[in-house]
Length: 249
Image 1 (cartoon, rainbow, N blue to C red):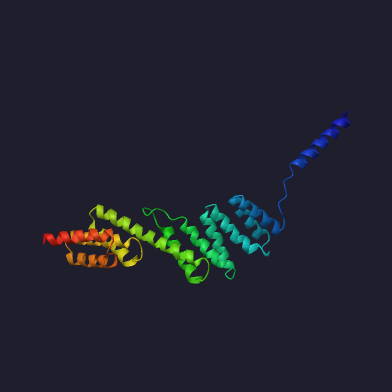
Image 2: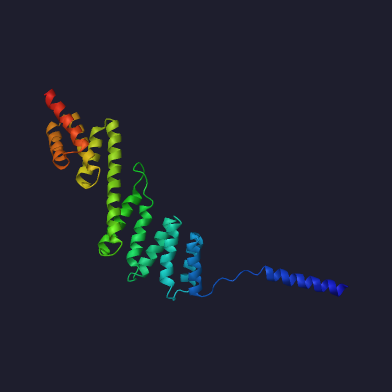
């Protein structure tokens, strides 16, 4: 009876030990990479990034090591962990400058900053970083398939920066701090001439110059506005200011 009980106890221990044995993960680079891809397809981005990094860590001399580093960055990007993505991309760019996917690495880094652009009322640090990164893509890889989109997004980031200047300028104008407002609008006129903000910026110059009694400067600003944007609503409003001033005189 005692032997039977002892035998049953030993069997239960063996069975328990077998059931608690952890599932072995793929050991070679190819299987690990395939597993990471499966995580990615299932949108398990955090697990995908972790597994891609494991390929590089455990198999640094594998033909998949460099690609895994880039794919880890992509998984972080999809997971909106942009800081981790940028760190991974910087490492890829540093250690694999001649890789066939290097243009994409630079583009993805720019996109990490681009995705973090916030409303014009907030700090635009990421907007500036995105501008610089997209310019680098265009400069380094002008004929790549990423350059066209980089140019488009660069224009959008520049317009966004101009929008912030306009927003601050309008606030100063509302506070009747005319010189500070004029400085902001003039920045747009001088530095962001190709953006959608330029028409209003010229109008605001006319408005403030007239308030300050600088009629010659107001006339010049209107001439620039009327010449370049004759059908703009801002040109029409600028003409009203100029006409009213001439009537007063």
